Image 1 (spheres, rainbow, N blue to C red):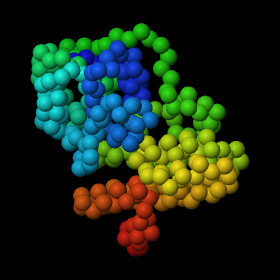
Image 2 (cartoon, rainbow, N blue to C red):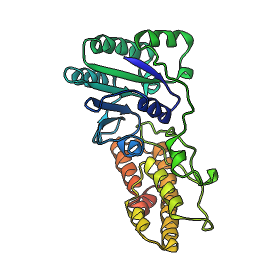
Image 3 (cartoon, helix red, strand yellow):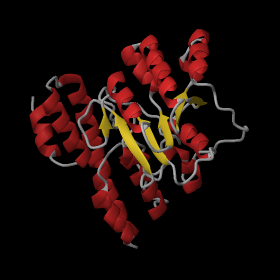
Length: 281
């Protein structure tokens, strides 16, 4: 078991890409982000993803140390491969440093007699010197040859203005259940609007967990007016969904009601009904 120093998910994945992992090995990625967000960073056809969240969703993993420990130990009991884990800082905020450190020590003992490797994403700024020393004693830091780590997203569309897009990297505010918070992005003006810019915006929406199926269909059109009109409509729905989410997270206490409402928001459906329910007063 080893640690990889990374300040965000992009940096962690960039470091993983520098590791020499045989294609025949299994790979598992445990993250605070769902596969729908990681799909543009990882080849999820080859990497099994688990989402650390309180939601009961396909591919989700409850952020309890018992569940995480059970998953890891049952996985490494046979075969060979690598497990990548991020979200250690969040687990510490939930369970305390000593409990998480104890679990890592237990896992380190089991992994040493298996054909598996585990890599933990560690942000040094999140720990004091004593905690770092204890962590690295159980999971030594992997040394990489330093080079400039540039976000893959920057390569996708370097011509897009920074004022139009979210800064590169997957780090974003998360709700208590582990889902990314919806945020209002800068409205794209008609002047200079292109299919490439729309693709970039769709990518940003997808990373917030929004269903973009309907607007993706317009990418097959060569009519930029049609694409822009559809973009304006979806952008307005995202704005409404963002305001609704903020209200729901602060005021709805019933877990089932909240889960259903947040799911509908990310589908961008039933917004009229939700606004009547929560904003009618």
